Image (tube, rainbow, N blue to C red):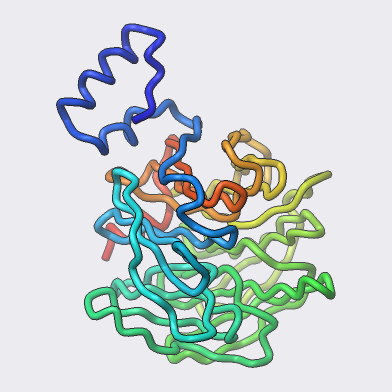
Length: 305
C-alpha cells in the first residue's frame, strides 16, 4: 500500500485500507501521482501492451520471459496467463466486444486472438508485408487499426484490420507507434516516435481515414503508447523522459505526469471506475499506476458490452 501518512487524512486512509482490504490503495492514491503496482523485474525489458478486461484484470505481454502474457490482479499480484505460439512475441493488446483478447504479434506479422475462457490461441490476421504490427486500436465496430514501424528505415505505416482478418494499408509516414480511436469514432490518432509528432485523421464509418493534420510536436524524447479518456483527451507515454502527457483532442498540452521509471512503454485504463491508468515501465520491468479525473475510453467500451 502507498499512502501519504504525513497528515491526519493519510493516517485515516491507512487505517481504512486495513479494514477494507489490499486493493483499496488504488482508489486512495492522489490523482496523477504514479506508484509501483508490481514488483521490479517481474517482467523483462520488453514489457508492453497493457490492457484491462471487463473483470478488472490487467494484462501485459512478456511476463517472466518474452513470448508470454502476464495477468495482474487489482492488488498487484502478477502471474502467467498464457504462452504464445513458438516464435511469437506480443506487443499491443486490446479486447473486442465479445471479450476476446487481440494481440499484436510483431515477430510473426500476426494479430492473434485468444479465447479468454479456453485460452485457445488462433491467428486472426497475418500479413508478411508488415514490418511489425506494433500497437493496436479498436473502434466501436471491432475493426482494428495497427501501427507498423520500420525502426531501421525511420518509416512506418497504418493498417486497418477488418472483422474477417483482411488487412488494408491506410497510410505511410514516420515511425508509427501509439495509435487510438476517439470516443465518438470520428478520429484516428497516430504518433511517430522518432519524429515526435502526433497526427489526427478523420475516420469514417467504413474505417477510412482522411484530412491528416499535425496536432502536437515535442522538441525532445520519444513517444510510445497512447490512449484516450471518455472526453477524447490523449494520454501518451514519453519514452526516455519518464512521463505521461495529457493532451486535449486538439493537441493542447494539459498536464505531464512523472513516472518512477524513465522508459514508460504503454498505457491502459481500468479499475472499478475506469479512472486508474496502468503503465508498463521497461527500465523497471514492472507496472505502475496513477489515478485520473475521467474514465478511459476502453473502460467505457467494456461497460457497454
